[in-house]
Image (cartoon, rainbow, N blue to C red; front, side):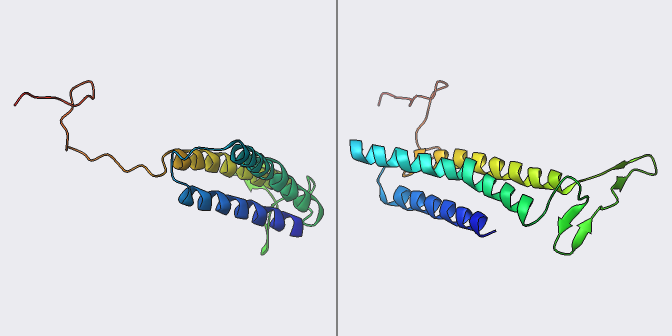
Length: 151
C-alpha cells in the first residue's frame, strides 16, 4: 500500500511541476540544448511512472495485501463483498465476478486516466498563452481570410 501511494504522490508532484513550469515559461521562449535534454528526461520519467510503476504497484498491492485473487468472488469493498453469489438474470444463469476482474478493471482505468490526461496536458501546453479570437470583429470571406474593402 505504501509503495502504491508513494508512486501516486510522486506522479502528482511531477505533474504539478509541469503545471508550474507551464505557467512561468512564456510561449515561444527559445529552448537550450540542456533544457531540452532535461525536459525530455523528466517527461520520460513521468511516462514511466504513469504507464509502468503506478499500475504495477496497484497490481502488486491488490495481489498481496488485498488478496484479490481469481478464487475470491464478489466485488470487495470495506463494507463486505457485493454480488458474492453472482449476478442472476431471472433464474437463467448467473455471472460470477471475481476480485481479479475488478483488480484488472482498476488497472485499465489507471491507464485510461493517464492516456486522457496526457492528451489534455499536450493540448493545454500547446495552447498556453493564447487568447481566444474575438468573434465578429473582422469580416472574413468564405475562405476564412479577412475581407479588404476600398474606402
